[in-house]
Image (tube, rainbow, N blue to C red; front, side, top):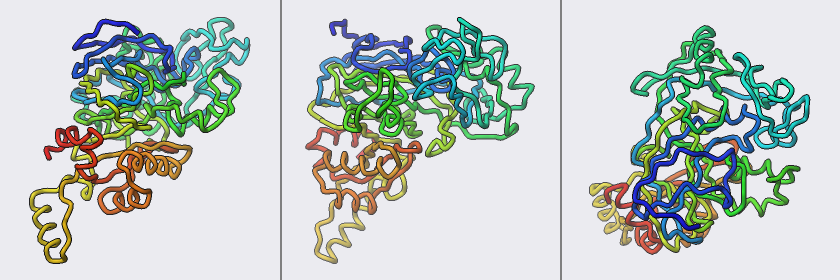
Length: 434
């Protein structure tokens, strides 16, 4: 890979649902440089567009100057700007005749049998995505229960709309979705779902799929320990033979709502250059993403990058905004420290007051498997036994569900001297002012 290194990089080109080392690179940004991405809604739209090989539409990978396998890259999210005025979402039904092993990956026309067929839009509704060759309904997804949501101008609140409004938005779906010029998806607003009208919701945008490139090619929606399970034994080009092969993942697909403006995400480098990619912006989402989908939107994400050499981590770390931390995970105040020292003096114990919050991301087939994965990653990172990790997380942190069935955030207050040894202390101090 030989590309000009720039201090600022704008990215508005996307893959067709795949991430991996053979994807065309978007460019190379300097260590300390800034990237601005313009991304389309990344989930439902690609899901209903048969030519996609994965369930998202994410950017081409971005190299970071000097990043080598065994390093890590800090992604400091400075700004998130939503541009869609509406979206549709809900829980899904699968149309089994329109795919092979996996409705997100191996699409086929149910009538002519074309694989990943080109498609055209005819009208609106769940029958509108048609095979360009034979005219059959070629989408592999429908709604089990669906809503269409519109947003206020400040993206503070949204409401679900009725059938008439959903139909109006469907007739101008690309405009209302604010699809970027290079997007290749059919917008999900075409499906015009209208259940649950008149429901008011709070908005808080975040990015659901952001991370680094895995060393093997994977469908972008399956670059995680839970969705990746569907690749094991699958009879298509991205099938894996065993669970062990899934260790190559980088867990870019997290759907963690704390990955928002102001947070710092630290990602493993598993291919030279790192290959940061971005997509799947959401207007809001409750913990766990219980419908498995949420409010996909177009928008801009701006972030700074920082190379961390020799930080060999299996998956991402997150330094969320302080307000997103639980009470017992927040940095100690000076009053906390003084009270701790007084109590330590009373009982003859040296009190460890130099601590900082970190979240270790884990993923797996289930929430329990994801938590075990996070225990292993935290132990490797901090040089602690599983028992110590469990105990510290119970006393100074906890576990949160990013996405069902299996992405979690394992939180603890970690010793700053250990974080310093791993090259992370300066980021923790920067994030929390400690």
